[in-house]
Each structure stands twice: as C-alpha cells, then as structure tokens.
Length: 254
Image (spheres, rainbow, N blue to C red):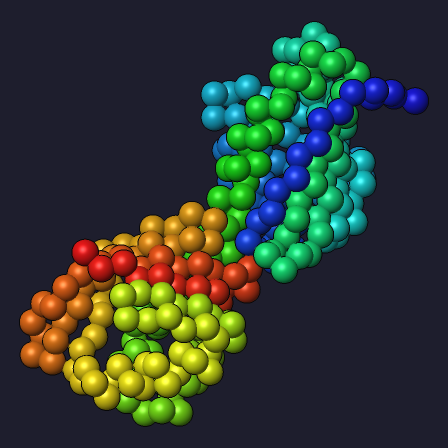
C-alpha cells in the first residue's frame, strides 16, 4: 500500500453552487479551462487524469474515487520529476455548500516533504485561477443583471417595479450611495418610488463593459436628466450571491 506521510491542505470559498463547482472536475472542457488546453479527465475510478500546462509540462494520474457533487480523489505526478512520478501522490477534493457558495477543501499527500513544499504556492495560484474560472461561468450574465438593476429604477408601474427587483436581488439587498442607505427589499422599494417622485425622468445608464472578479462586478454609468442631458457619472460595485442574485450595491459618484 502506498504511503504518503506528508501533506498540504488548502481551503477556499467560491461564490457558486456546489454542482457548478464540481462540474469543473468532471468535464474535459471545464477541466482544461483552469489547467490548460489538452488537459482531460475521465471522472470514474480508474479513469485517466491529465494536466497539460500552457508551457507544455504534463502531470498525470488516475481517478480513485468520485462522489458527485461532494468529493473526488485522483493520483498525481510527472515523468520529469524523479521523486514525483506519474500517480505518485494523491489529491482529495471535498466540496461543501455554505451560505457564501461552496467551500472547497484540498488535501495533497506526498511521499517526500520537498515535493509538498514545492506545491504550496502552486496550489495557492491554481485554486485562485480555478475560483475565477468557476465564478466567470456562474456569473456569465453579470452585465444583463446590471442592466436590469438600472432599468428597474426607471419602471413607473409599482407592481412591475417590485417584480423586477424581486427577480434580480436577494430580500436582504443592501444599497448605498450619496443619497441612499437602505437595507432589505421592503426598504429599497419605497426608496426607489420616492426617487421617481422627486427626480422624475432621471436615470442611470451603463457605460462600457462590466468588470467581474469572483462575484464582485464594477459597472461604470452615466446619469441623465429628463431631456437626456448628462447630470453626472460614476461606478457601481455589485456583490453577487452564488445564485446570481444581487447581495449588495454601492454607488460611487465621480
């Protein structure tokens, strides 16, 4: 029986559903999206695991265990490493659903302490890449969500406006800007209604593409008056939950 007396552990939280996160360990295209083109995995016991980094260096092993969407175990190594040949270490990934999305716990077991130490920064980097790739997939419609937020502020029908916000925000939505300090949808809806009453015809429009990183979205905007004249500009910071709904918005005027 192979013994691995040395190990490294790393835990991260990703703002995406567990099933979405797990799919990046069981689908060739998604597996390659965070390792490199040509990487592949056969997600069944005995299936081949191949990692092909962009610089051409390859690591390989085989899948040992799969319990979707909770756990996957595979061996790992590389032909060019004298003490870490193909399949000579073991990686265990465990996924747990949490309020923020998915908690990923990794344990990588080694025969040699030096090989463990050489992989500490590698996993720190690779799991950051992984989190971004997963989050980009989970929030692929971030721009559309931002546009729907701005459009909801201009909806004059109260029922339609409430339905629009319910569809894109969590009930605990928080909103902050120069003129706003509201918590929860029951507080936001009358606040928007007052804005329409005291600032009729005033609207915000997204300017340019959104910028997204792991559930945080930056969206530049321009403020326009009733006649379409520019009345200001700024940036909104959106925090998206693992379900894609808006958790919080902060508006920064420039």
